[in-house]
Length: 151
Image (cartoon, rainbow, N blue to C red; front, side, top):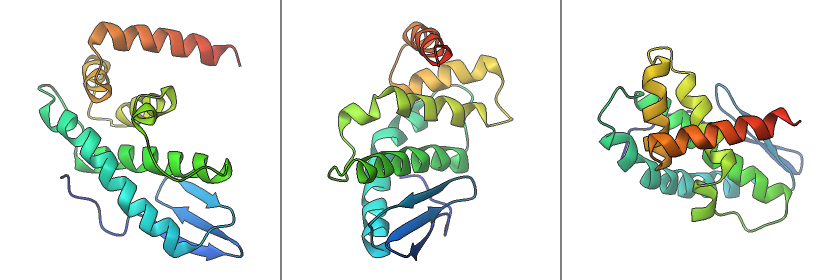
């Protein structure tokens, strides 16, 4: 598995909620306990890493580094935890969540945040991380951009 930056997540109790922060992210989990959020995060970040790390490692082209990869899987994990907590759903990440447009948006944004990649490198990397062909990825981007432009 990829090496995780140590202490990259801070979790603290705030009244009846839990605040989870990273250098970029800030989530407030209502009606939660800090130990439960941290235990769940540790379990789910391992699942995210297990899902995405083989794709990340096997990408033949220009790639993001370990910190960039960790930022992406951390955001995916915290996003789905938060979504499930605020919607009163069991906290888990299913296969459909890995393939969900929101996960793809997080991957796309995370790859684009890496200044060492150019636009020629980010398309094949994003496609590979998402498990799509280049053409499928570009079609998805076009459709997703059109969808987001409606709002």
